Image (tube, rainbow over all chains, first blue to last red; front, side, top):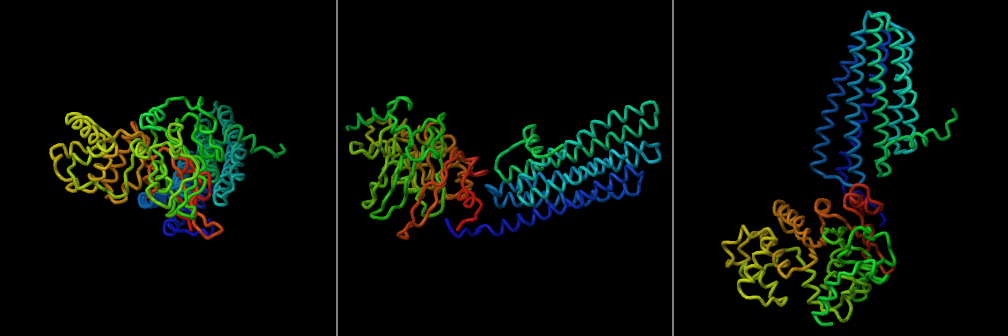
Length: 235
Length: 298
């Protein structure tokens, strides 16, 4: 076959528009992660309130995307890579909505913890997790936009230190058990850590979806995938 | 070969692994082979179809799983209907048509000189694009299919056969009180189910359907599709359809045909991909298939 032309132009234009709308959420999601981490580590309840307000934007876009997605599916019944792209956009929409929810959880912790005594070492750890998770979200989205399966496969390696820091948070919390107020604060910070760890997992899940879109094969980024991702990394 | 010998040959239940190698393997293209776990009801091997000097289809090697529905899809002129008609020698009726290669049914090439094409068409029935009932009663439409294939039973046996065929075609409840009325008195969807009843009356093993729903409304289409899913318990079905969603809904496997210009500027159809239907419509192996099912096609 030569001279391939698109006989499904209107559908593909609508699909492109839907994709742009979904991807418009990535900047807000990154911004919310940064703001939520700042709010919870700097005791900033005004910033926490702004994070909660920003989530309304994400929720609004989520519902719009869901409505348009359903309409596109009902009208066009896409197949092949179009179907896989539709599937991944639905997943990405849910991923952003849940990332927003995790940021709201962190913001609410900031409000709850306001005025309580704090441990700077734990705050540093939460900041470090935030600094690790935001590039994960960005990398997962860029892998999708570029159709780069190798870039998608980087995600498990990026997630590894996030998991390690999250696991360490329990030890940090136990270390302050003798001070009830600090323990209350640290227990909530452990939940903030867990929320950031979930954001990292969502980025990995999304990268797996991206690999499916590109290759057409379902693959979980398991230990083998992790080993592949670590290939060529020195430390 | 007499009809009796032919019947005996066709009901031979020799396991595939005991049959001669030539007819149990696709010599030229293993990519289109059925999985070993699927028993083929029919197979083609390097089939070329000509209309005069024009090669309409080239080198089709594909298997049709027993009690499966196989959909043949592709753009106009890709030869999918031509291939379908090869499967019960319907192309014999076109004077200029010639088939090279083999079409195996029970490990017998149906194009061998000793094969009776009428018997082939009894064993491999066909339903056409447009409902084509005869200008006879509903009863006689169904009975004809059996009579022309040598049914010699008396009236009670024929009554049973007609009822059985109409039940299988999911039409009995709607027509049991008006069997004497003309087939034309039925709606389009009912007429098509009447044609299916006529096709199943001689107890075929394979049903070929050439765009059986293209003249029907969406509800009648869904009824035929539901019927196909019921019928595959008993028959092997091969369907040509322009409707990809229909192929996706009803078939177990799908063969995608494409068409390409040859050196003489003639459009020749060929098999691009044969795959499980869910695989072909979500992650096809071939770029041409992907382009076709997503509408990027020229």
